[in-house]
Image (cartoon, rainbow, N blue to C red; front, top):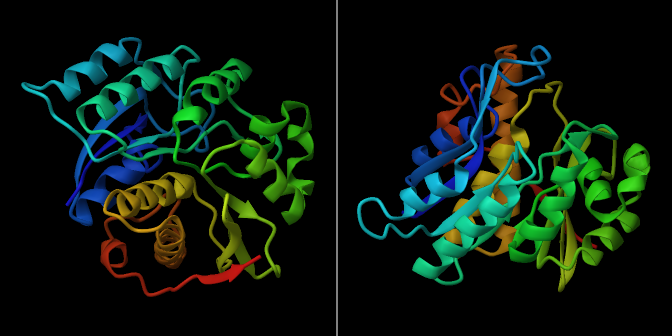
Length: 282
């Protein structure tokens, strides 16, 4: 078992941000500390401008978490939705404190900033993540839009036109040890692809495409990746397992025609996924 710190949004209804990772990680046997960057009534995919409360004392809250009541080390950190640009500095400080308590713990950054060629955060958030969090990350998990924003903000509107070769080139240019690009170009229309790019190579990780589109799958994927690398799995093993779990959760969600991931109903596959992703070296 690992003790994992997740820093992201929290929604009262639905499963995105910390709500998409806390139960799955606990179900897989981990102790989870969930630190919110913002609390929302629901995610904006249901209706725009949900009631929200932003967390302004994030650094102080994180410090208190790690020192409650004595030093409380964690085995890994996941950073997801950054609600306010100054929070990136706060989070970097929290990660530094966590690594002071336990050196070299992994940091996964899921730069939740946009999708479908559009950003939905303040552009300053993009810049602060790039400046303060990417240099500390062991792996980042952007979609194509977020990869474009981090590598060349002027190209965001053309992100969905990105080829596999360009995605690999951009990922390597970020100088992060590993980049897992979600919804990357797949080998066929009936597949969905995540592209793992490291200094040692690149791999396609594909599963069948399902007739289901809900929010929070990137959060779930990133959480599973962190949980696996925190216990010593390789980046590739972690990414492949996470892809299979997300596929199976989506399959159950589609079967129930739900508008949110059915994490409770799909909890068995969180432990033992039925699907093995197809992994192909590039």
